[in-house]
Image (cartoon, rainbow, N blue to C red; front, side, top):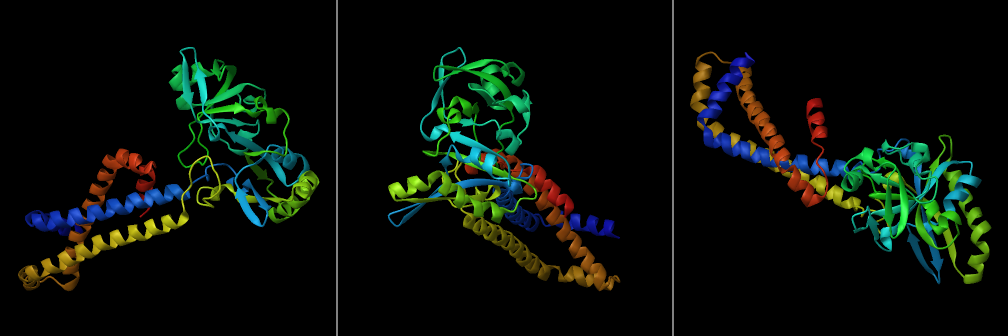
Length: 381
């Protein structure tokens, strides 16, 4: 029966080309807008959730109070992470990141002249224990253990050496100093708040050799143990501040404290805090979500209006079907089958359109469209 409904529906839609075309166009535009915005929102919500045990990783921020004014910053001293690892049983491990691009770019020479690069950072040897990015070349436990070691991302390795395999074991001259390439990692995902091309061992930096409690120029991360109590960990931080900074606070008349921030909340969190990549104000995601729903609703309303207007011109057809013995259920099935065909056609066209517009969307929003996720969601529906 449904096969017959669909066959007749296809003939009717083919016969009424203008009606079919207007409905397909309206529904397709609505679905393209809805799907694109939905994929964008999903991408923003997915930031930093790809790490193993992401729910146990916290970024440490620092608050200063001086002269009645409070300032919260996203960077901390170099001594913080080693102290947390050594003195806090709640901390499984931690890592420190120094984004050199905050201060300057670097000159990289692979034997063919200097090239200026800005996405350069110093990280300590625990970096891959906290952020488990895929290592494509090199031994994970021995990548950044010694001074003047370097890890490249996949695209950077190909840019300088042609392939991942050719890069390992080679050297690059950076600002006049030789760095041994001990490994190559995957490119940082677009939904990671970290984004570099070069990762150098923090032991190369002076504060990597001799960490101090000043200045506060470093991003610090702590990964807590599975059984750790976050509130107990935070309650001990003031004691650490008093132990290492108490005398300095009283001498210079300021107060400081450290606060935890879940790594999954960095991108959509406090936008006044400095981060490697610019974040997104979460209120814009809510606005985009409302816009997506409204656009889809407008497309559906337009379709219903056109279908209602068209129904008045099909009274003769409906009457004839009743005379021929069609009951209410059969008439309902016929009209529903037409709606199903239009909806399915619009969905296919919208997916094809999104596929064609994906490169332009990336240029416009700097966010890749995860079409595989879209097909997965539609399959479940």
